[in-house]
Length: 139
Ligand SMILES: [Zn+2]
Ligand SMILES: [Zn+2]
Ligand SMILES: [Zn+2]
Image (cartoon, rainbow, N blue to C red; front, side, top):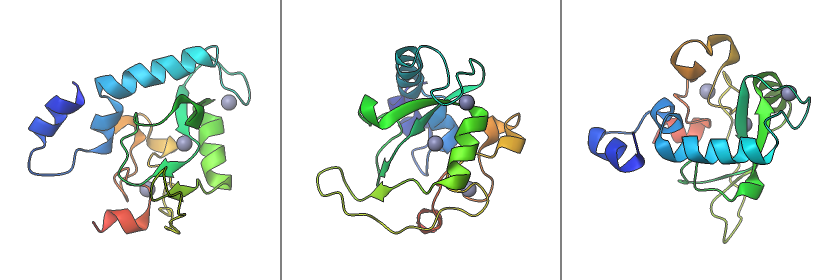
C-alpha cells in the first residue's frame, strides 16, 4: 500500500506506525539504504534482521522523508542497543534545527518498537504506538 492509499484508509484517524513501516514508500527507502550499506549492519556486520535507523528526527516528517545521510543500516540487536544508550536528537524542522526536548517513551526508549515483541505487529511499542515521545502520544 502506498501513502496515498493509507491516507484514504485512515481518513478519520492516525495511520498506525506499523502501516507506515509497511508502506511502499518506506520499503523503497529501506531497500535503498540497506543496499548502500552493502546489506549488512554498519556496527557488527550482521546480515540478518536488518533495520534502518534514523540518526535524527524532525517533527511531523514521515519515516521516508529523510535524506539518505540521515539513515543507516543496523541489525535488530545493534538498533535496540543504540536506542537504549542514546537519545536520538529531535528537531522542529531541518531549516531551523531547534531541539525539542521531548521525553522518549519509557517502554521503547524512543524507538517505537520493542524487540521482545518483534514477532507481533512488527514489534510496535504498545505504550506509544510507535509515536516514540511522550509529548506526541497526547496529540
Ligand atoms: Zn549489528
Ligand atoms: Zn532507530
Ligand atoms: Zn514506546
